[in-house]
Image (cartoon, rainbow, N blue to C red):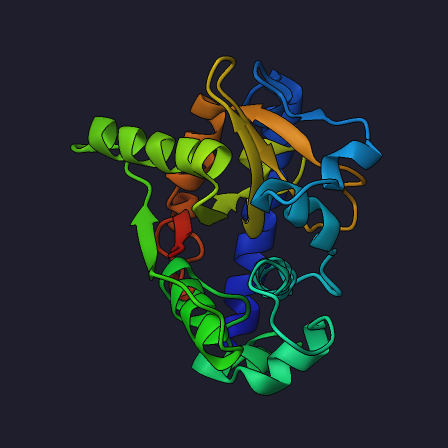
Length: 253
């Protein structure tokens, strides 16, 4: 009953916030809006991690399974890179094999102990265990929380550095944990998707959004990207285990 009460309050708050941004042309309705990319067959060609991400990008199978689609994507990208034997990993298959943090139960309608989806720290643990369970080589998995207060400049520079390494050195993969309503015209809810590219000359970050309503990848300015991952989701999701957004970086050998 308490979880139902909390859910009703959160849903009401999110609806009011969405219509406020719509009416005032702020948030994702304001400047720096996401620009959806025109699908191009060339994006998925080549041996780079970026090309492989476009090849293995999948959509989440229900409203709370963005973590599953995101992790399956990077697992299949790295299995291809390291020529791991066996078929493509599917979303149902990975939930059966990786039982970290009651991942499968968290995807159910009632969640695990009332909690659905994966907060940033739990996502990090699930990513690391998924790589180990599927015998995928990696150097380390790093969690970086967004920061809007003291230390903001340092964290921004650190994240830009990882984005550049992904784009130009091809030595890491990045999964973003962000406020979806900061990026696109949706509710301000926690969401997870892989980063698909970065252009430092324009500052645009490409998001391979796993939401089925997003028909193609989209670009957003780095400032908006950082704002979305530095959110604390207005504190309304804290009772469900969510604190701060950020990124998960998979460093490769």
